[in-house]
Amino acid sequence: VQLVQSGAEVKKPGASVKVSCKASGYIFSNYAMHWVRQAPGQRLEWMGWIDADNGKTKYSQTFQGRVTFTRDRSASTVYMEVGSLRSEDTAVYYCARDFSGYDLDCFDPWGQGTLLTVSS
Amino acid sequence: QSVLTQPPSVSGAPGQRVTISCIGSNSNIGAGYNVYWYRQLPGTPPKLLIYHNSLRPSGVPDRISGSNSGTSASLAITGLQAEDEADYYCQSFDISLSASVFGGGTKLTVL
Image (tube, rainbow over all chains, first blue to last red; front, top):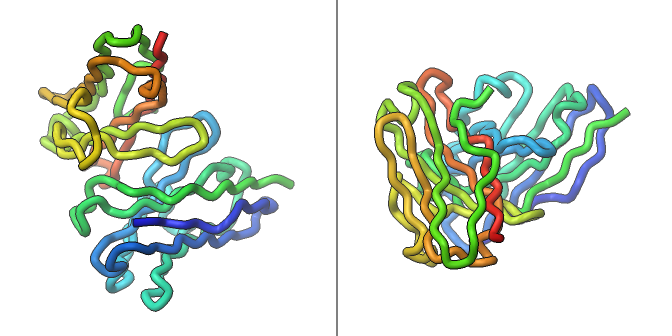
């Protein structure tokens, strides 16, 4: 099982970014995918999840309205788009597969992470 | 603010036993939601060590164990090894936030 994320991004405040996470080694539709971010020196922060089968999403209240998760079943890939970027969004963003499928409780494995830097 | 509170650091000598606490509240651990533990080495993503409070995924040695009681949980590592030096995070679900939440992380130093 492997999750491979897109490369590092540098964006200006107010811009948007789209990060991809390509899954392999398992049946894509059988597992939810979560997104977690880690700002420099900060705790891990759960952002939400997407149902890889039907595309249903659930967002943390912190990110509701500013983050969008999508998926492409044919490419076994999920995407995370964040809009209206601000400097506080500078962080490493991880995709992480639901451990059990759709229990929506814990996360493993994780992608390698995508560093997003927001700076003017 | 911390929904789940962990000590910033713990340390131990090789071969010793260390424990890492995770203090929650009645809206997460105390409400009966499971606790999970992750290990993160520098520059790498977290890896699941414990799920459902005390179960180990395949490949995690039995010298690593988890427990919980009331509104708190603990991770114990016995027979400490140099490779255990890492950051450790607890995680649970918080019903008031309707979100998965993490502790602030604990840096384990092997002396």
